[in-house]
Length: 235
Picture 1 (cartoon, rainbow, N blue to C red):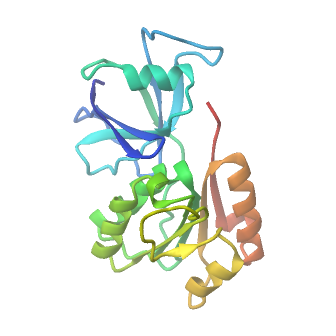
Picture 2 (picture 1 turned 120 degrees about the horizontal axis):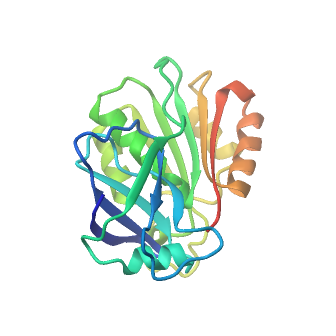
């Protein structure tokens, strides 16, 4: 696939779009392995990385997003010219929305863990799925929050989707923030989930974040069969 666009979507986070052949199909929430065939730099992890698809299946491109950490892979990706070809392997993974629409979906997400969730949320709206969706999305400030506008628009378009954005480091932030403040915790969940029962919890992001959110889901009464997780390795 060819790189067709790259842009900043939050402070320290970039999104990359690739052409999507008509024959390429995936389910919202899945991931792909992106391989740079002739990179300028490399490291011990090689030239490929496994990344969640941020695009919804109905969108005409394939999109991924990543925090720009300065690794060889990410710097190569940032500096690649538009039109550069990449090898895309996949899709893979089973981190996708459950089929039983009677059970609400509760997403406990921090930072770049939003990538597969954006795909799921936009796909649910596009297909007019009846599932009740609750996204608890934690970031430091609105400026560091990837895809915030997309998610706010989705919440306006889909009456079954509730977005609860919460910021943890607003000290010194010059803008106005009318949403929640602080970390995702039991009291926050209880305020928004008090009238729902038997939800399925979705956790995505770095290992430490997923671990803490798993403890929170269990504290809310979830068992292992009601928790689905996707851990992001660091690179």
